[in-house]
Image (tube, rainbow, N blue to C red; front, side, top):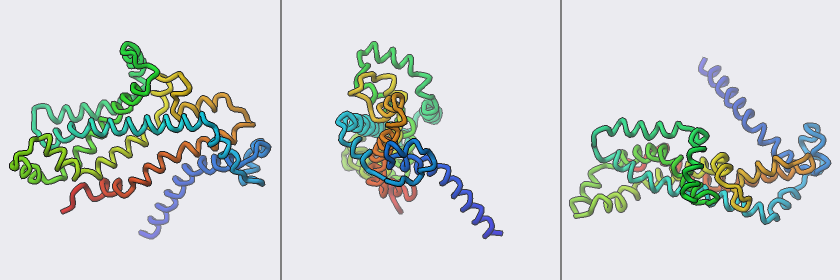
Amino acid sequence: MRRAGDILTYVALLLVALFFLGPFAWLVSLSLRTPAEVYRGSAAFIPDEPTLANFAQILSDGAFATYLWNGVKLSVAGAALATLTAAPAAWAFARLRFKGQGALLWAILAVQMVSPLIILIPLYRYLDRLGLLESHTAVIAVYAAIGIPLTVWLLRAAFERIPVELEEAARLDGNSRLEVMALITLPLAAPSMAAAFVLNVVMNWGQFLVPFVLLTADQKWPISVAIYRFAGSTSASTTQLLAAACLIALVPAIVVFLALQRLLTQALTAGAVKG
């Protein structure tokens, strides 16, 4: 019975993997085709003459490099701002006790459930009044605001795993609360801080609606918006270039994840402090 259950589990996992890998495999197939083979559809799933010329053409385009850099800058800056802003709030929820603490914590999480689509029009008018439209500063601030609620919850759990005795000892040595948090708590919670940063980068990298509405100048678009604009004007003769651009756009997020994978695993499995 147990063996049958294992087999069903593997079959289910295989089906899920095929569901997600199918579109990715189709994207790879398109990116390796010549323009003539694009018209053959599924009959040329494995191209007769696979080529990397599509990737070379995309990478040699200066505008594409600008879009890619804009995406990296907005994602990383938004993630860093969200992590640094959420850290003091998370520490306060983990260490201080005040009236309405539980309700406030759940209220912060409720903000995470609000779709940016709902608040985008008033947010657009608000940023227009501040003169921040068409600026990366506005997009970074919105990215940070979207990521802060979840980051507060993640870091609060990490701070609670750190023995409070360490902070009390530092306080007895004459350090202020800010110094204790900066010198003791944050270094010990570094894996969780890195995990929160990575999650925010990945979320920001996939953002489309916010930069699409707030940025109209093409030189300021991140790669997610630029590909959409490109797709809207593409034809069958440029489909292979669009596929190559989509694959290249995946690289930065994968690099960030792989670079911090060890810290991410530690944070999600072992906690910030062992023993």
